[in-house]
Length: 302
Ligand code: BG6
Image (cartoon, rainbow, N blue to C red; front, side, top):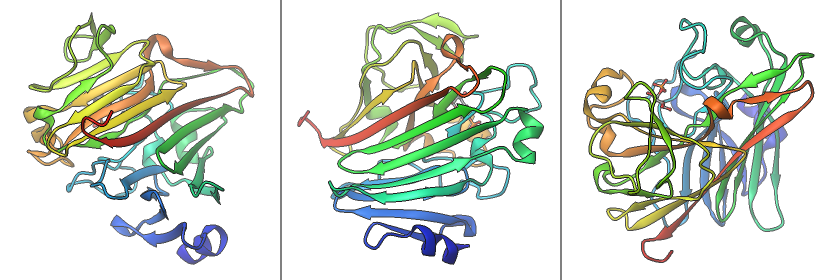
């Protein structure tokens, strides 16, 4: 499989396919801007390291690389439902896209030195058993001065298709209790820890307990200010009305078998999503794109 991937899609000095964790194939993108690794399983960005930086994405040391199980960390692709299935709780949390093999569609190098890979998921027996729709879901990753990740899906059924989705990005931080997340002040959110009560706060977010919030109509730019790593992570997005902020804190970390007891200090999730009122309903043949754009600057440099 690796040989075939390299023969078809490798680009000298830009893209190579290697064996990653769990013996699974990964695409390694490398260029003048940095490095990113993408797992074919899940269409899942695992690492992003701009030159001169430490990794921007976080992956658990306890992540499981087994078929049918999502990888804990990086950028899981949440599709076609976010959280529990709306009517059948036996179906897997956050849908199926992060629990199955995808295929590579193309790779490219651009004139500005950036590198692109596109992966796709199309219906299989597994997806049909969970969701009887015909669709194509693509993830495009561009490694340039910023990292751009886009998930694009098209309704190939002859009936309307409703989807909730997320780019469920796990960001690496020096200490989650010391970071400040700016950009969601005064935006109403549903508190998943308080029966989806609608709340809002005028203050930037600081983590001192479990946080699990769905911010509504939140198209703003978000910053994760990390004094420990002396950097700010900048996150912008398109095609996403909701933003999820999640940190499991102590008790939930202990309950998750693929998450270390103290790892809640190393990460925070800021997810570009469409949930609740922002559910995306597509007529036959229509498509929708959710894009998250990530960059890093030294602290205080703006
Ligand atoms: C977040 C949800 O998006 O994902 C949380 O808001 C959930 O409620 C978290 O716990 C992780 O979900 P999972 O299925 O990967 O354990």
